[in-house]
Image (cartoon, rainbow, N blue to C red; front, top):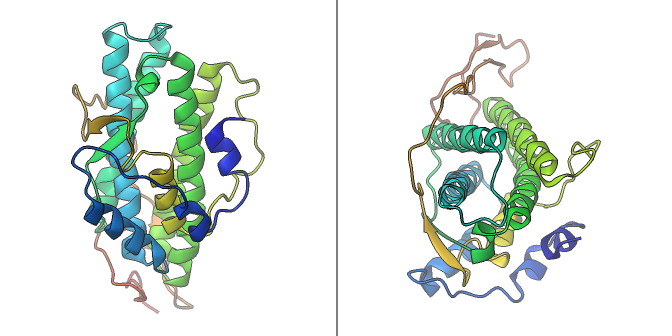
Length: 267
């Protein structure tokens, strides 16, 4: 079990997560770190969830782009097979489409600069192991997010959250398969690792993805994003009103304030 896997094996409290978190990235100020902690310390709101999700999707776009670049330069201890390159290129485009959707819903990323251990861009196993762990954390964050969206009567965002988490689960399985994990689909239910989306944000700090001492990477990362063969580029489908008798209608992109019921059908 990796260090991160052992850390997330049980639900994480905010107080425990904050212990030992360091700030060392160039350009990442103490004030920024304090802002992130203050933001996470409050009860999750719809806006919190949208902001944090947009932030982690910016990381995903950037990290996968850096991996593709490093592989093209021959920096990994094992060259990526062509099918793996195609998978990562598609995954990067999917992360950008996720980001577009959450920003359209009102999400504002908290940071654009991230930090990673340099070995993530030279070790085949370290890179894809990091993908597996990050995807598990992102899926768990959406389990917490769905609770927020449900409490705030936002079925539109519950749907989008599920669509997003389901696709991130595909990334996890594909990275597991690339690593040689058999079977790569090795869980029956996605673990609920966090008691809030704020705790997920704190885990990004604890692992050094935000405010760490590793190598800096900046969104969107190198190279063009290739959306070839990636379909369902927006979270379509039907949503329903939270009022009894509401009529299912096509999804709308217009954000709704916390606690408000989206007007999506006549009673």
